[in-house]
Image (tube, rainbow, N blue to C red; front, top):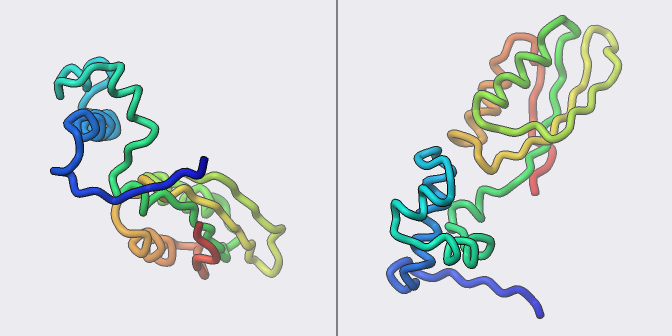
Length: 145
């Protein structure tokens, strides 16, 4: 059977669905360390949480689940790539792949794929920070999905 999705206003949802979302958010933010703790705090049984957890998402989370591919030209100097990766990690981006060419004429092209679903702030802010980073000559988004 084909999966179908609906957008439903929160006040129309059964209480167990709303509480499942609350538990997921508490776990994501680190406000609770276990499902048991979070479910107990919102007044939801663990069995109800496990029943709904894989099928309930906030609209914001669905829109933000994405992989972004970024191409950069970096100066061939020690530590430049490390600083770039630190910027990505510092904004909660998760680097999935790295491809670096052999440096030619003092520049290396690096292409990284980043899971940006949990990124703090806007992607444009990360791109601006990358472009301002010492040793980054060019940075551009070449794909998103």
